[in-house]
Length: 197
Image (cartoon, rainbow, N blue to C red; front, side, top):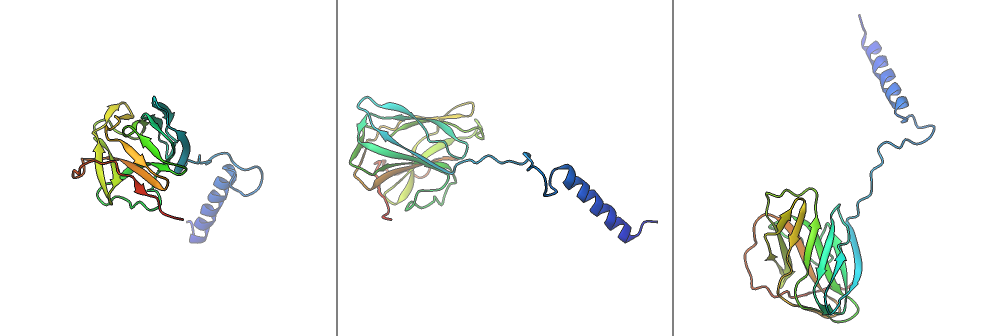
Protein backbone atom coordinates (compact mmCIF):
# COMPACT_ATOMS: atom_id res chain seq x y z
CA UNK A 1 0.00 0.00 0.00
CA UNK A 2 1.37 3.39 -1.04
CA UNK A 3 0.86 6.32 1.28
CA UNK A 4 0.22 9.92 0.27
CA UNK A 5 3.67 10.86 1.57
CA UNK A 6 5.25 8.09 -0.48
CA UNK A 7 3.50 9.33 -3.64
CA UNK A 8 4.72 12.89 -3.02
CA UNK A 9 8.31 11.62 -2.73
CA UNK A 10 7.98 9.68 -6.01
CA UNK A 11 6.58 12.77 -7.79
CA UNK A 12 9.34 15.02 -6.40
CA UNK A 13 12.05 12.49 -7.29
CA UNK A 14 10.69 12.17 -10.84
CA UNK A 15 10.54 15.98 -11.23
CA UNK A 16 14.16 16.37 -10.04
CA UNK A 17 15.29 13.61 -12.41
CA UNK A 18 13.56 15.29 -15.35
CA UNK A 19 15.08 18.68 -14.52
CA UNK A 20 18.55 17.22 -14.11
CA UNK A 21 18.28 15.26 -17.34
CA UNK A 22 17.18 18.35 -19.28
CA UNK A 23 19.91 20.57 -17.89
CA UNK A 24 17.37 22.54 -15.89
CA UNK A 25 19.01 21.91 -12.52
CA UNK A 26 20.44 25.39 -12.48
CA UNK A 27 24.10 24.38 -12.54
CA UNK A 28 26.51 23.57 -15.31
CA UNK A 29 26.42 24.83 -18.90
CA UNK A 30 23.21 26.44 -20.13
CA UNK A 31 20.98 24.30 -22.30
CA UNK A 32 20.70 25.17 -26.00
CA UNK A 33 17.18 23.74 -26.10
CA UNK A 34 14.41 26.31 -26.03
CA UNK A 35 16.20 29.23 -27.68
CA UNK A 36 13.54 31.31 -29.40
CA UNK A 37 14.67 33.40 -32.38
CA UNK A 38 13.84 37.08 -32.23
CA UNK A 39 11.40 38.20 -34.93
CA UNK A 40 11.24 41.98 -35.36
CA UNK A 41 7.85 43.65 -35.01
CA UNK A 42 9.04 46.92 -36.62
CA UNK A 43 11.72 47.42 -39.27
CA UNK A 44 12.61 50.26 -41.62
CA UNK A 45 14.91 51.65 -44.28
CA UNK A 46 15.47 54.85 -46.24
CA UNK A 47 14.78 54.75 -49.97
CA UNK A 48 15.71 57.40 -52.55
CA UNK A 49 13.16 57.40 -55.36
CA UNK A 50 14.47 57.02 -58.91
CA UNK A 51 13.14 58.58 -62.12
CA UNK A 52 12.78 55.09 -63.65
CA UNK A 53 11.41 53.41 -60.53
CA UNK A 54 13.20 50.64 -58.64
CA UNK A 55 12.75 47.43 -56.73
CA UNK A 56 13.79 47.39 -53.06
CA UNK A 57 13.60 44.81 -50.32
CA UNK A 58 10.61 45.02 -48.05
CA UNK A 59 11.96 45.49 -44.51
CA UNK A 60 11.40 42.07 -42.89
CA UNK A 61 8.88 42.05 -40.04
CA UNK A 62 6.92 39.37 -38.22
CA UNK A 63 8.37 36.68 -40.48
CA UNK A 64 7.15 38.48 -43.63
CA UNK A 65 9.64 39.34 -46.39
CA UNK A 66 9.39 40.47 -49.99
CA UNK A 67 10.00 43.34 -52.38
CA UNK A 68 8.49 46.74 -53.08
CA UNK A 69 8.14 48.02 -56.65
CA UNK A 70 8.88 51.69 -56.01
CA UNK A 71 7.26 53.84 -58.71
CA UNK A 72 9.13 56.56 -60.58
CA UNK A 73 9.41 59.60 -58.37
CA UNK A 74 11.62 62.05 -56.54
CA UNK A 75 12.69 62.56 -52.96
CA UNK A 76 13.60 60.24 -50.14
CA UNK A 77 11.15 58.21 -48.04
CA UNK A 78 11.50 56.16 -44.91
CA UNK A 79 9.76 52.81 -45.44
CA UNK A 80 8.70 51.16 -42.20
CA UNK A 81 7.01 47.78 -41.84
CA UNK A 82 5.31 46.93 -38.57
CA UNK A 83 2.91 44.57 -36.88
CA UNK A 84 1.09 47.51 -35.27
CA UNK A 85 -0.02 50.85 -36.73
CA UNK A 86 2.48 53.72 -36.75
CA UNK A 87 2.18 56.41 -34.09
CA UNK A 88 -0.77 58.67 -34.78
CA UNK A 89 -2.59 56.18 -37.04
CA UNK A 90 -5.51 54.33 -35.41
CA UNK A 91 -5.82 50.57 -35.75
CA UNK A 92 -8.66 49.60 -38.10
CA UNK A 93 -11.92 48.73 -36.35
CA UNK A 94 -13.36 46.58 -39.18
CA UNK A 95 -10.43 44.29 -40.11
CA UNK A 96 -7.27 42.82 -38.58
CA UNK A 97 -4.15 43.77 -40.56
CA UNK A 98 -1.49 41.17 -41.26
CA UNK A 99 1.08 43.97 -41.43
CA UNK A 100 1.47 47.71 -42.03
CA UNK A 101 3.76 49.45 -44.52
CA UNK A 102 4.33 53.16 -43.92
CA UNK A 103 6.03 55.64 -46.27
CA UNK A 104 7.15 58.84 -44.53
CA UNK A 105 8.57 62.05 -45.97
CA UNK A 106 11.00 63.23 -43.33
CA UNK A 107 13.66 65.29 -45.11
CA UNK A 108 11.89 66.96 -48.04
CA UNK A 109 9.02 66.72 -50.49
CA UNK A 110 8.30 63.34 -52.08
CA UNK A 111 6.39 62.52 -55.26
CA UNK A 112 5.52 59.07 -56.56
CA UNK A 113 3.91 58.68 -59.97
CA UNK A 114 1.63 55.98 -58.51
CA UNK A 115 1.22 53.79 -55.45
CA UNK A 116 3.96 51.22 -54.87
CA UNK A 117 3.46 47.56 -55.77
CA UNK A 118 4.31 44.68 -53.45
CA UNK A 119 5.34 41.03 -53.54
CA UNK A 120 5.12 39.74 -49.97
CA UNK A 121 6.14 36.25 -48.89
CA UNK A 122 3.84 35.24 -46.07
CA UNK A 123 4.21 31.55 -45.31
CA UNK A 124 1.13 31.56 -43.06
CA UNK A 125 -1.17 32.73 -45.85
CA UNK A 126 -3.61 30.43 -47.54
CA UNK A 127 -4.17 30.77 -51.27
CA UNK A 128 -7.93 30.23 -51.01
CA UNK A 129 -8.35 33.51 -49.09
CA UNK A 130 -8.65 37.02 -50.53
CA UNK A 131 -6.09 39.64 -49.51
CA UNK A 132 -6.44 43.40 -49.86
CA UNK A 133 -4.45 46.59 -49.32
CA UNK A 134 -6.10 49.42 -47.39
CA UNK A 135 -4.77 52.95 -46.99
CA UNK A 136 -5.39 55.31 -44.10
CA UNK A 137 -6.54 58.51 -45.75
CA UNK A 138 -8.76 61.41 -44.75
CA UNK A 139 -9.27 59.93 -41.27
CA UNK A 140 -10.45 56.46 -42.38
CA UNK A 141 -9.17 53.13 -43.69
CA UNK A 142 -10.17 52.51 -47.33
CA UNK A 143 -9.43 49.53 -49.60
CA UNK A 144 -7.24 50.77 -52.46
CA UNK A 145 -6.12 47.51 -54.10
CA UNK A 146 -7.12 43.88 -54.25
CA UNK A 147 -7.79 41.14 -54.26
CA UNK A 148 -4.12 40.23 -54.46
CA UNK A 149 -2.82 37.66 -56.91
CA UNK A 150 -1.53 34.61 -55.05
CA UNK A 151 1.44 32.46 -56.03
CA UNK A 152 1.92 29.81 -53.35
CA UNK A 153 2.61 31.76 -50.17
CA UNK A 154 3.42 34.99 -52.04
CA UNK A 155 0.94 37.84 -52.31
CA UNK A 156 1.34 40.05 -55.39
CA UNK A 157 -0.28 43.47 -55.11
CA UNK A 158 -0.11 45.60 -58.26
CA UNK A 159 0.84 49.25 -58.04
CA UNK A 160 -2.19 51.50 -57.95
CA UNK A 161 -2.45 54.28 -60.53
CA UNK A 162 -3.07 57.12 -58.07
CA UNK A 163 -0.03 59.42 -57.59
CA UNK A 164 1.23 60.22 -54.09
CA UNK A 165 2.72 63.57 -53.04
CA UNK A 166 4.01 64.26 -49.54
CA UNK A 167 5.65 67.17 -47.80
CA UNK A 168 7.95 66.71 -44.78
CA UNK A 169 5.92 65.42 -41.87
CA UNK A 170 3.39 63.52 -43.99
CA UNK A 171 3.04 59.78 -44.44
CA UNK A 172 1.16 57.26 -46.57
CA UNK A 173 0.21 54.22 -44.47
CA UNK A 174 -0.99 50.93 -45.96
CA UNK A 175 -2.29 47.79 -44.25
CA UNK A 176 -2.58 44.30 -45.72
CA UNK A 177 -5.48 42.18 -44.58
CA UNK A 178 -7.46 39.05 -45.35
CA UNK A 179 -11.18 39.33 -46.01
CA UNK A 180 -13.41 41.47 -48.19
CA UNK A 181 -13.10 45.01 -49.57
CA UNK A 182 -13.98 47.89 -47.25
CA UNK A 183 -16.69 50.35 -48.29
CA UNK A 184 -15.44 52.39 -51.22
CA UNK A 185 -14.28 55.95 -51.18
CA UNK A 186 -12.76 57.88 -54.02
CA UNK A 187 -9.07 56.92 -53.84
CA UNK A 188 -6.91 59.95 -53.40
CA UNK A 189 -3.69 58.52 -51.95
CA UNK A 190 -3.80 61.47 -49.57
CA UNK A 191 -0.86 61.48 -47.19
CA UNK A 192 -1.51 61.87 -43.49
CA UNK A 193 0.36 64.34 -41.27
CA UNK A 194 2.85 62.58 -39.01
CA UNK A 195 2.34 63.15 -35.29
CA UNK A 196 4.75 65.53 -33.60
CA UNK A 197 6.90 63.93 -30.95
